[in-house]
Length: 368
Image (cartoon, rainbow, N blue to C red; front, side, top):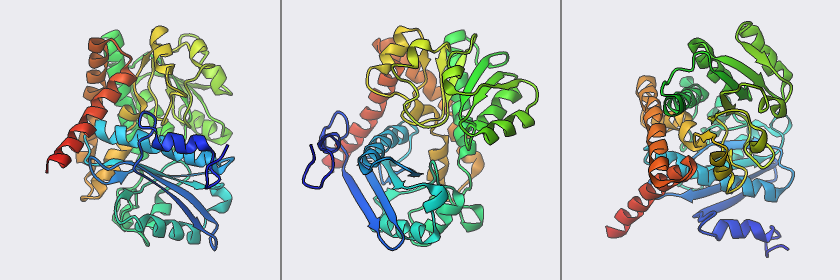
């Protein structure tokens, strides 16, 4: 069944259903000359202009791209709220294989699309886009972050993203084992690309035992060459989640890692990773809790990157950003405490705190 635009009806249901979406605006973008097809989703501007990255990915269908943009934008609202930023949530996806379809003309066309929103959405890097791409987009759009230092930006945000995830892991260890140290803990990292490789460094520096996997053999090989001691690899994520004696599982690739197939066989006591939208569907957070697995909400612990790109809008200072990202440790502990107090999973506790901040902001706007 489709609507008048030809999009599957369930996509519009997600857009307008307040519990699942409640998005303010979704823009479908096309530039025939460059081949650009993109979706820009703005979930909320209650706390300020929507901020979120641009994903460049070869979606199987346009409907899949819209659905991903909606989910990612909603996640950014919650992430920005929990990070204490004065930004709402938005996300954009460009449909296509970035290795083949990405051109300067396409990125410039995309920049014009973002600029047409007049600052309601601020873009940055995500899967498939990089600092160099944002430099190109910024030539057409001043509401662009994640640019290179040479072009007035802060550079690669994956450094602080990984640092924040590391702080979330330390908080998880403190809550579960009474000690934030990860020394001697066995940590499984699924995805050792932009963020995962930096996370591995933090963990190795502390003396953790690490097991890695990635769909790209070259990415795995680089890590093994860099860390010949203390890091081993398995071929697939399916193998990784079954590794005996795993203390922490860190999903650092695409979303949906925690699902009906993975949760029942997961050996780790803690899940704390950089991937967005790790819970495949509502109810997975309860399945984790029922198994005694502590889940550090993804949008809380992976907020280091958005803290960095938000700071870039006001004149970037790395020390200031790192200090803000370090607070992810305290925020994560506060969520675990709220979850225990309310008798709910940590993901639900984080949602409640974020929703309250957004509701307070809307009430303030309405009272003016």
